[in-house]
Length: 318
Image 1 (tube, rainbow, N blue to C red):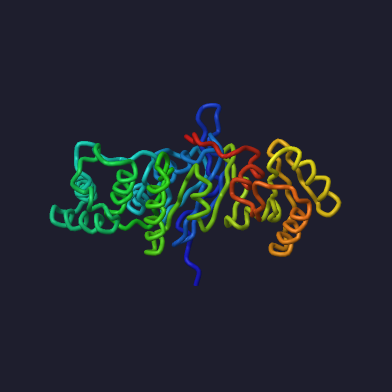
Image 2: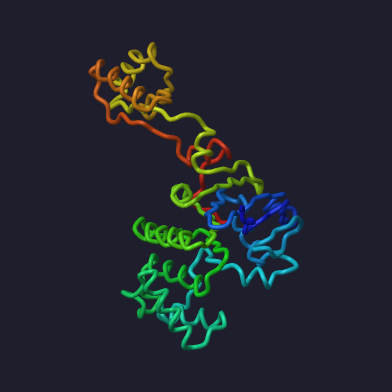
């Protein structure tokens, strides 16, 4: 038996004056999955999140979260979801533990239950080492883990993560990813917006690319990559003379794509092992030294550029 989607968006639109931030957007988030919402700068990701969280009213269209309409049943929506925004919503002059207790009290728990819940979250998110430090004195990754824990003083049906790892170092990002995976394995449904395509590739079951407020492509990460072509073998020459020699030697045998600026030759490789071996043998026969020879699969970065016509922006704000 198939469960009902946790989020259903139909024709969702938000207009600010003469600017349309979200334009007739349709999407669904299935229970127990991670959906990543990706788009270039100004695509409308955060505006979409704000409408789902009842913080911004739609101009038109419809959005249902956990069976409740975001306009007519806003209170029920707020009870069903937790939102972790782009910036940690913590009180700097309280400890991490005190912030978790405070959030539990604000969710209606008594003092004893709030302390018990905060202790459980401290253990779950490995916060114990810094639990009693003031938030203003902990690292960005530690703040983010505490903020994520604070979103879970109740177990939400839907967790919305808006740019959850922006500004974090690679180690802290990995720690947050690990926490998200644990939540999903525990049955939490996640809607994720992110400026990091690697993050979507790591976490998402389904990806929706939006551009100028519209959905331009959707599917699993693998499906989106498949839309832009097959994998390839890339050969990077050590210098320009070597590049020219390789082009001459290989052009009669392979369907080459070349980039002289980067001294790179690319050969389609639908047969991974066979094509890689054939290219490697041909390059070896020339005696030309190369910096790299490797099998490349399409990435979400490639898909992003191909499907939206723009590279992913590191400064996504809307």
